[in-house]
Length: 518
Image (cartoon, rainbow, N blue to C red; front, side, top):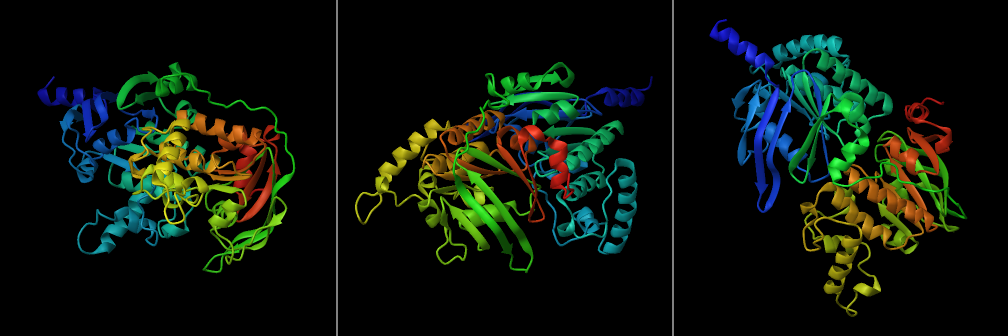
């Protein structure tokens, strides 16, 4: 055998990706420590771990966003340097981010060629892209209108555009970060068919997700990270969700929080004919009616963008509306004249918003300052008539952070210094510990690791069992089914139906979420 043939054979036999002893520190924080991993060619390889375990840092090194302090990257058995994302693309690596990198008012074609235009004239590039996209769509079930504006596409179709962008750039390796977070069950199933097709065509896929059910369903192998280290790589067929959860957290984890039957009492929240029209004249809420009783969790299911956000904003005092809302029998102003978050809190309403970074926290402020926001006029925070007692705020925040297992439990750190799961715990601690009559909570475990999910679910059930009313909005059907005592499904600003968790399933809820009356 000639030297060239031998080299080609070795390259074919080599793993698609091999990372050797990768380390990366940010100041005193060791994000990755001596990580080694092999991802075989033509497989779907899952990576799981708690928030802050180092998954994103490792993938950012592979995609050229960060440079490792030490270690080596091999692609197809050959050492490579990846100083930036362009080098990653040249190495055949594509990445589909959790938050899509698309220009909303550009067409699909324009987004696909953006950054890889061939020459000053766009027409040849667009014509080439149209041909290539047609071939890719037929081969991988990636059908999408090439002339559609991104802003007019569903989230699932936007995700397909991101995959098409990577394939157009001739990626053989695809990294997907939490790809099903905003998809309906049917869209997630379609994505899995696409990934399986890509694998069957020889592509290599790295899937980062906190959903262990997805890991078990679609991956061939799974690597587990904990506190910056690689603790195990397993064949998926030889493991279980329970084993993966225990390896991720370092202890046994309850994947389904036990809860007894609800004991609902009086109506705490009553909503009648609630309507919202946005600045463009589009009706976002179309006559919503619902109730939430003391001692129950009402789950609101739906694909993002179907009115759930507007519902939370109205109830939380951030959005004007028409209709009627009563809390504990008293009407809540919806006009905006006497309607704000401060007024709502005084009425016993606490609010954990869907977007913790935009609405729940001020990222540059400290944890203790964030723990006091909205409640800074509380008597225990007042030193006298003129000044707030910062020491009292810090001590209170420190105690809250310890009770809610915020890591690190350092109240003087800026909110931006915490992982997403720990940021969520800060917001939950601030709101739940005020003993509200009604808790509004949006996407309680979005981007949160499995250990924190268990903790958050336990706190929500405990609040219910203490006789409080909880209205929970979530796109996670597994969460909706396991936590809710009643479920309503929203589509296009309307409630499509109400179900009891033990009398429905994900398929029926998925149809309602898609606007199909089940």
